[in-house]
Image (tube, rainbow, N blue to C red):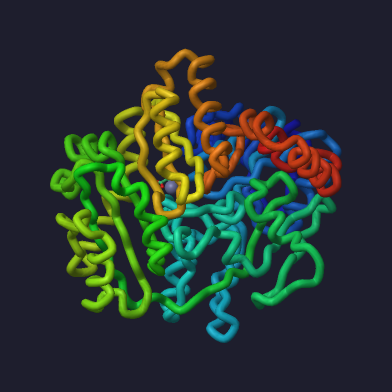
Length: 446
Ligand code: MLT
Ligand code: ZN
């Protein structure tokens, strides 16, 4: 196999097993197998050659950004080469006139957001890993985050995609305008496809004016179930939070007992973080209206008084996943979704399932991180039953088994088993049409 990677143009090739080891994992519980190599392409000729050699030699190409995925989408399967896009060239360019930003897949999402902000513009997608992930990974996985509650997912902010297809060439799908309706969108098909149809190497993103005001609220509650109707009540009353996060009593208790200093003073039996970012959201009249709506729940409401306090609140929320992982290294973290109107029914069903779990996450859009903390100590057959029960519950309530992390390897079996067979047949037909030799991220998603 070594022969088939020697002389690859415009690329760094890693083959030493000790260099390959770090690529076996992402941030999920899934572990891959040792890849044949890791290739870091620096230009189109590397990709052209890789595609040619992959077809000739029958190996697969597994795309990888910064490795912060949560579903094993970028971990290598058998007979694959990891295509690490961290050296893919290109600059971040903002067009204030087009309200757009172009960037290569290798651009850190943090830099993309900062480049927009420097011009008074906003790129809303904010997955938890936003300070360490690469733009390409967020496109391949259609990343979400707290702001999805108001602004939607990554796919809602993509105007055009540059992608490597099975002919070995890079093609552009989309234009720098929100209005583009010439036939079905192949670009949108690629977003969230986790690299099974082709590899995304860059994109043009949509921007919006940067919000100038934030009202960030800590809402501790005595009876945590009281929170469950609040997302729906807020929407029905015309409020649209830019984020609505929550910790259930168990997660909050862990944070308070073992978390960082800022977490130790967190009040309540359970806690929500609400943020608004529209013009006027810090005005007294806005907050008074909100207090009216919250009624007795607002008893212990705290408003972040400055940017420092706001950042401190978000720091605790942002470290929750890593904190739980450190304390429970064998945990499995899920990310089901139910419509916000079904949150109460979901938690009632979760109670009936009886699986030992704790939950936090994006209550405002019904995307919940149900964590089975002792997954590694649970009999695998029982764990599978618990997870399937969780997925079925979400599906029965009109939800889905992944809100933002994707399918990858972690949820592939469940996705194939629980989806409408017509859905899987159609996806596989698209896969055969776009990737007839099966070189793109084999064994993932479908
Ligand atoms: C989060 O919102 O904290 C992450 O998406 C959840 C996770 O890391 O499992
Ligand atoms: Zn999340």
